[in-house]
Amino acid sequence: MKKPLATAVGVALAATLCFPASAPAAIGTGFTPNLHLKNTSNNGGLFNIQDVEPGLRVDSCNRVFTSAIRGVPTGTDLFQVLVRIGTSAYAYRGQPDGLPITNPTGLSPGGGDTDEAIGSFLPCRPGQTFNNQVGPLLITSLNLATVYASQTADEGRTYTPNPNAAVVPGNDRQWNAAQGGMERYDVVHSVVTGNNLFSKSLDGGLTWQPGTFTDSMIAGTTTQENELGELGVDQMHHILYHVFVSVASPQENATAQAGMGPGFHTMWMAKSVDDGLTWTDSIVYNGPITATYDHIFPMMTVDDAGNVYAGWSDNKNVFVSFSPYGPNVGTQWSMPIQVTGTMGDPYKTHIFPWLAAAGNGGLDVVYYETTGATPDLASDKWVVGFAQNKNVLMSPFSFTRQVASDHIIHTGQVCENGIGCDSTQPGNRNLADDFQVQVDPLGFANIAYTDDHDSTIPPQTYFTRQKTGGLFGGVPIGPTFGRIAYGAVAPHNHGCMADDHDIGKGDAMRLKAPEFNTPGWLTVVLAKRIALAGPVTSFMGTSTRSGVFVGKTKGNVPFNGAINNGALTVHVGMQTLQVIPDNNSVNDGDNACLMKG
Image (tube, rainbow, N blue to C red):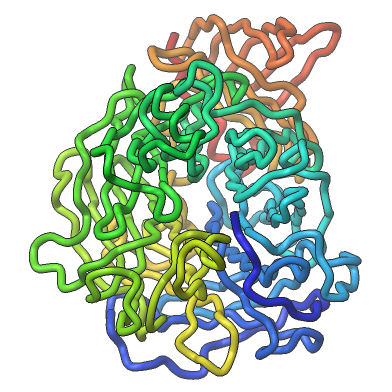
């Protein structure tokens, strides 16, 4: 649970382009000069507000969005970082949760926590508008009553406020994720029940469906003793994951609820293969009963091949475990790999980890670190640590480490007890509770973090981007960036994609054939809304570009259809849906596909 650190007056929507004035003396040299993301509006001012605990997303067109909280009831700020090689500029995009949305007054229904989600219909291609390729950006902000959701399709120039993403009242610390262009997901810790509640939207975050619990396995029903972490989505195989840390058994759960049990010493991963309708929980790592791994949030991520990673801190070092894609993905895990505190690491304390993965085995890890022996020392001097392994699956102990911040970001204690910092645990909470890293389409790490080195103003958000050594080797940003080359067949070979993006309709289709781990999955998007989604129960490929299939929607309505040379026809009830690729367009490179039965 969070408590805002400060309040401030509101700001109007703005899009001021900003550049860093100068960079402090460098500590790390592998990253761009750290960029202070400032609220540049007239009302609110540069020096009257805090912006902390940033959310961060990088989309398939290499657009970078960072949201940061002011605190309840003054809401959330959004920034767009305009990435260039060697330096960065940014635009302030106003308050996604400002009231009223067209001219914010400084009051807001959110500001307690923030996160984001954005997805793509297809890999980004040059010469087309972003809105035809990338779905809307979802930004959420929290108070204990609601998770306030806001959507933008024009880089934060305008916002559409949405209903409560958590569906039910009484919630804490939301996390968001996306599948494809339109599906958006939210998970919160329910204050009412003590469980982790998942909900989803099929229209980019405008409306939300009732949720399901992700933590249903420990006590046979639900567990109330946990700290929830991030949501993750395997985009290739349509598998959802949610990580949390808790106790190990129903007996420990019962004693913990009575205030007599052990600490949170067990890492859990929830997995869903039916778009969040049901979840299966598996233990990632069951540590010693005296251990605690809720410092503050456990983390997880999924790479492009479907391998899954979990991470946590024991208040000294950061650990990760991985589960390779296969029949047991998400249910069988490697032994913990110690990322920090080895091979002469001069830093003794590492907290607040966050993970980002890409490719097939590439993993980036960030954390705050200090040379002090604990996070409770007034003499602690903190920096942003960064570790990277380009092939965790084959060489799990080959992490390289460097410092990503170019200055000391905080001096003194760091409290990790959320709202309890005001009562049960002394310490400084200026760094709030988390920060984030994301891998861009070129494989470079992008980091947004909280910083209070300037004691004359409240804590602020900073941004930096990796300059060299990305997970993909790194190439200059240009019109062809993207993880899948234009015109190439997607590497999974289980599906087919077609689109009418070239003429601006926003139509898209993807079919993934069934395989050993998950059912096949069909999603049809028409006019930027999901017209049909559900598992494919049988599929037969008739050629490398054609096939027939049957299935049922998530509402259990049967459908059947065919793909003929990249064009989709599907019958559901009395309705017939069609998506026909524009074969004549020079920009349309995704109408060839492989299909396997």
